[in-house]
Amino acid sequence: MRSPTRRIRVTQIVGIVSAVAVIWVVAATNLASSSDQQGYDVSRPPASPPKAQTLSPMSLVVPESHPLVGWDFNPPGDAVPTVTADQAIATANQTDGPPADSVQAILAIAPAGGTVAQDTLVWIVRYQGACVLRHGRDILDPTPGTTLGGVQCGRQFDEIIDATTGDEIIAYYDS
Image 1 (cartoon, rainbow, N blue to C red):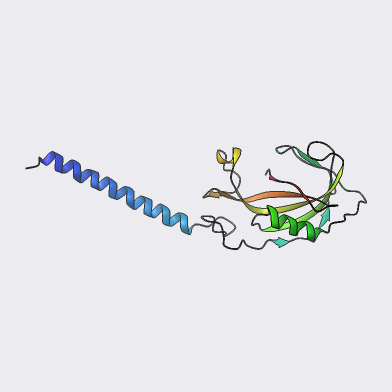
Image 2: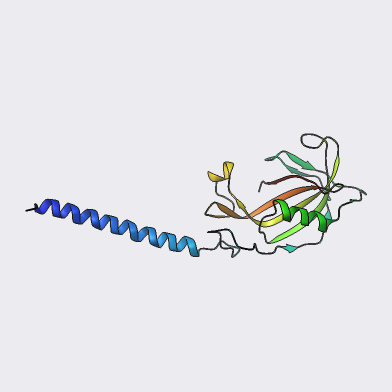
């Protein structure tokens, strides 16, 4: 014959396990049906990413600095690219381009230093409202944007394309 104390302990353990199972099912259901602020289901990668609105290309007007990733850009002056804005966006979309609200090609000069040996005419293919995989410092600091399942949305993501050769130089996000 079992003691009443042992029966209570087993009942308590079964109750705790049941409660944990219910919480897990509710959490999994919420995660699977959750969407971020832009309406993307970020609990899993989309079968076909939402198409970003393509904005008109432009030239950089004032110098731009990205100290977190060590890149600076200057206005291109009268420089004329060999690669079109549409070609740069197509290259970016084929390489690292993330799902985003909008994409725009911005003509600029990447000054010599670091990755580029000489001043280089580039297209900054800028994705606004981008959904990117989190890594590095962002795992510990989830702001800005919404984070679920390792994806963070609402970011600015830049892919730098050489405006003469069409080659990708680098891709990063720093906002």
